[in-house]
Image 1: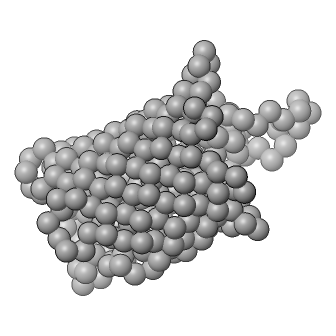
Image 2 (image 1 turned 60 degrees about the vertical axis):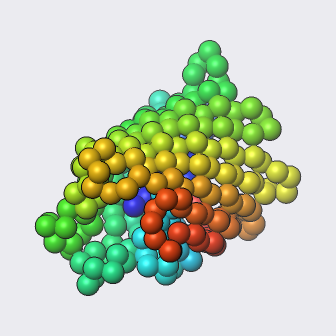
Length: 249
């Protein structure tokens, strides 16, 4: 499941590509004569593709600790409205019931006019696992929202995602995210996050996860190395070191 968080790889952060797209929409100020150049339906298209040694979603592997190839495409308007789709291979050790995850989402991300350092993002995300038996109840949807503040030397964010029927028929679920990103010289960045997954109906135990990572951009490639760990999940497979290389276009 692609984490939609303001910090992590898919989700309450907007997806990484959506976040980049929103940032571009907020900062780009083209000359008037060039405003419509490259526009698609009044907005901008962007895409991303990447290879990762694991697909970690909310602290848990989605590929049985194996590699993942992921990619997505986004359309964003200068107003902050965006829509997109993202996909990855998955492996839940379920007899190949699901081998692909496809996420579609739409939202709105922008900054506060009177306080441009403060930005927000909220939207809707649907997780689809084509080929999986309907009795498994893999498919589900979420709504999400987040706030982030840019202190110049670092950016901090907080977010929440809610699903009325989470993955695998586990009922109401909330995911709370807290994170910080620190830009360093030479195109290096460091990020850290602490998150909490809560299940309202007791179908699964609540747990928390945390992560810390480094990123570096070279030759237009985004390299990342992230350590993640879950707490109170009740499994022995609760930590991962993931390397990724991705390209945004």
